Length: 280
Image 1 (cartoon, rainbow, N blue to C red):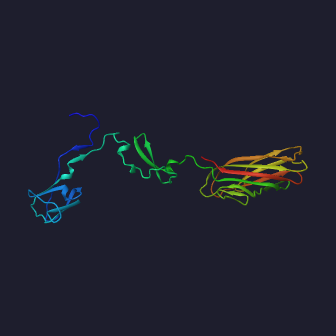
Image 2: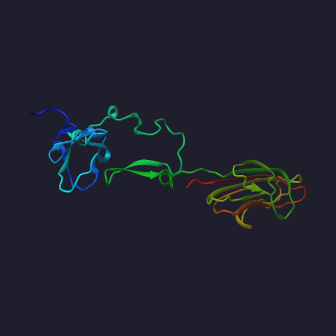
Image 3: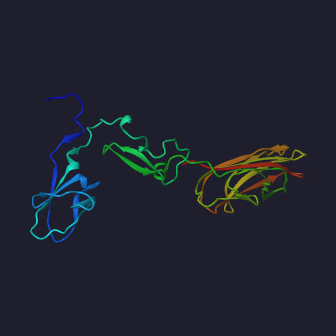
């Protein structure tokens, strides 16, 4: 008789029978696990045996134990009474939310954070299959953070005329990695990458006789980038050159800041520097 709907999840089948190779023993192994001896009917030499403790046989899992040992020439078989039905896979796309247990996913609340070795399911379109990959591989090359971040200042720093000198940055506003010390930024371990660096200087002098100011960024003791402002007439009381750059740095590389001023007396400067790692 025809029917409408999905194919039944169970098919009727004949009882499964297993024939044993008999030897002089009381112990046999079943091909299919059972809960107890009542799930099989054991027949020896055409005689149905009585199941139960203290009777002809007991069974648990795949272990069949006889009360009396068989002998060579005996014929023994078992009928699996608990296997009258055969289960089959459900039809495609036939299982919905109401058919699955709520424990199918461990921890059903949203995770606030995930570990590097946690796995994430993705769909492989070429294979039409679900696959898993670790969180570390999933985010590799994607995003990142701008740390470490450094912002330091020095107000009214005293300067020497016609001299290139290191700037003392004694006011740390931001130092997320504790990587700035002795007016020097040192790249922490594990923070290799490209960095944006900016130096701002404002020089001033009471006699209006400044003609040249340079701001210099040093990498590992050598000039990497510089910016300058020049007034040939030497009639400025203040100049504000700035310099910025992008530089590739690895662990233990270090950055320092220098200034050069050509003027007269009582030279001073307000300075600030910003450093942060770029997201690649």
